[in-house]
Image 1 (cartoon, one colour):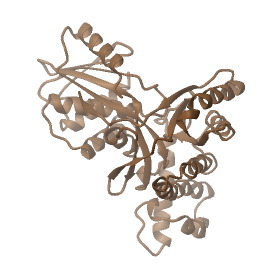
Image 2 (tube, one colour; image 1 turned 60 degrees about the horizontal axis):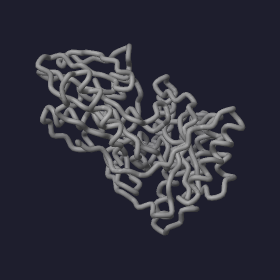
Image 3 (tube, rainbow, N blue to C red; image 1 turned 180 degrees about the vertical axis):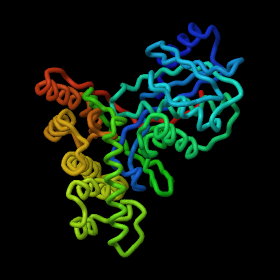
Image 4 (cartoon, rainbow, N blue to C red; image 1 turned 90 degrees about the vertical axis):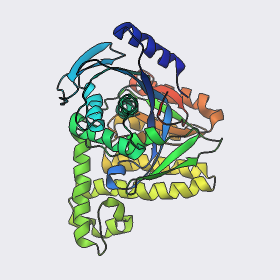
Length: 387
């Protein structure tokens, strides 16, 4: 599943820029979120998958304290000191690397590195290029500096980089999905215990990624505001329910319906989305175990409707794709994937219908917006590794 062409291009770029070979190369895939939207930071459940698009990070130790970092697509270099790592206001892509390096080395190292990253995840597509960069960075630099780190700890280091360096209070979904993927399987994660398992999809299922290229910027505060609404609701339910409530994961839809009147309508609606998503993930696990792919797909459609109406993290471009998907033979389910506000729709289809469904989705999007969306076949892929 690792793209050899992208890897080889990275090595060529590295040699040309730094005049030597890297000492270590790591790879981390992006992810699709299949079911369970904004449930990770609510300590709930998610179905996700690592995908066959990812990011490589190549590095070698420096002879000084200077860290040289190059974005391989832009061939732009930034520098910082290994023992003085702070967030940057310009070239903000470097913050994902800087935050991961700081967390991994406990805020700095005695010597720097020469690093370059390069990948093929479409930026802003909702496929978590940021987590792929963090996890490939973490694995490569852990190997380079001889640091032992387990997957959950590395995922938390990447999450902290997002929080403190990039300004987005994300959960752990993206990082764990990138690390825990297996070929042909979904990752089902309990974000309270951080225990995950790999679940077979079976040969009758594949996914399409429909990248709308609509704006997908979560660090502008929209994501953080949604999270704050969920936390406000959880605090309220903790005061009215007769059992402990640490997060919205502890509230059922029946309890929400009974007690929602004590919340502002907008906050109540925001809370209903992750509560319902948790129930859909658990139901989806039962349906997959019994081989009911149409039933699982129906839950994906329900999930998008909840995003659209209750959480309001969809947009017109995503809604057009999902509505078109409902009318295309062979499509079993569709929903936005990721934080929302743009990016991509993930579509569940039978492999035999992938080609015709792709063409129909691109055509329906073009009829509305004047140009087709990009549609790619997504295969659940192995997780991150040092090459």
